[in-house]
Image (cartoon, rainbow, N blue to C red; front, side, top):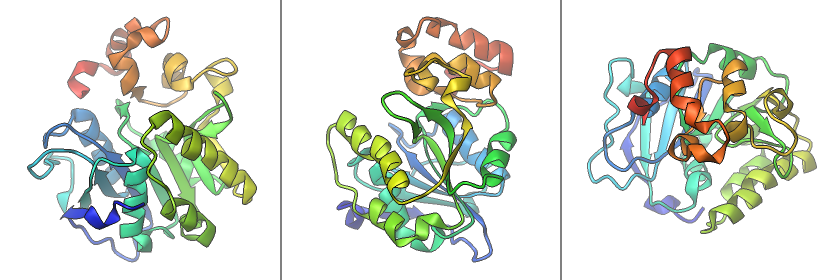
Length: 265
């Protein structure tokens, strides 16, 4: 990814050699202030033992403010980079900057496109850490093709450090069109995994929450809650008309989790 040279280290927290858990978080915020959703996600990952590396394309001029009572700033790394290449660019840059972390036993690769978590992530992370697959995803979709949705994926057994996997992430090109980028790198990643013999497993399979060909996070948002995924797609909060019962989301979250989703944005 050709933006690596412009990356700045805003906060550096060396990860001990014995640390087994790492999370690369692709991030964007309009200002230095962080949403409750972002702060809660970082805090929850840290609670579960993950060293978090934030790779941000925020345009904020000030350092990003991750100050919160339940976040350990001395264990948080923050990289700032130009807003190029979407989340795939952020992950590529973070991996290039921290190649020594890619072989750790438990590596999460996620973004901030979900609102939440509204509840602890123990069951989600237990499923990831207990998988026998090389690559795990919180949610599998078969919209267009079967794939692990890119907002929350995990890599086991050091597969991110394998040469063929490093080439995939290192050779990502900047594709300005988001639809083309998703087709090339989210759907294309599934073809890559199949071609090179990497096994996969999801926490939630699409058939548990939606009919064939539908997007689980759009049309199966309520069933995802039932399946143990305490998140909702940010896009759906902003555009509830994308699904028939989207207008019910705030009320369901208030009833189920006892919180106002508007406070998380």
